[in-house]
Length: 265
Figure 1 (tube, rainbow, N blue to C red):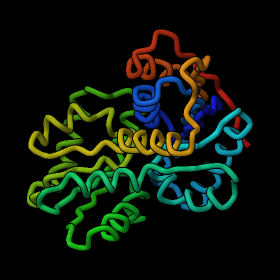
Figure 2: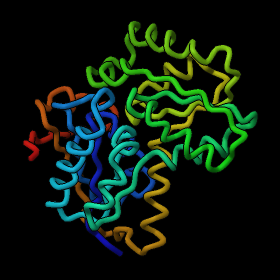
Figure 3: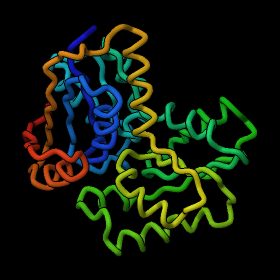
């Protein structure tokens, strides 16, 4: 047993999808979450910038009493994960491999679509992992850069959001995919609209998959929190917290969420 906390970070609100799944799958854990809302989105930034931002966040989380760090940001996972693992002596896991494996296991016709930020798509991180497991799978990737800002603004069920999603997802109309991998942890917040547009396609939620990975890792290493752990969940942001608090309360079904604004160095 290990009652230390789990550190989770994202460029903004999207990592709440991971928080929700971890709360569901391993409910006795203490969670420290940081959303870098002042500098979101990460998807259009350089690798050097993303590595620097991610390092600043990990340094902040390490000041808490934590046992593992979850990079709940596909862009950081694609571009900064290796550097973070070299720099810090703590278990750090990213979202990409878990999502890729789930897509491989789900597809029946070996045709997978992926949507994500420009940085994630351009990195080909998902495609490389998928091809390393099965070279016969066809991967169709498409950058959808407007989706993160829409989620950050709380536009989860606006008509304009559906219009933009329809335009983006039109890319897959002639690709005959049977599986769509949501390559950004913000995107599960838009899953109801995506399912409406693509009702016959399997949707892979990387937040669900990474939470399964976290649970298995903690179980196999004897690091799960005890059932009598006085768990707590702490939220931190780098900008004003009002929008974050509003979306977090709605999505996590929690009455009292009050994120603290912090300055990263």
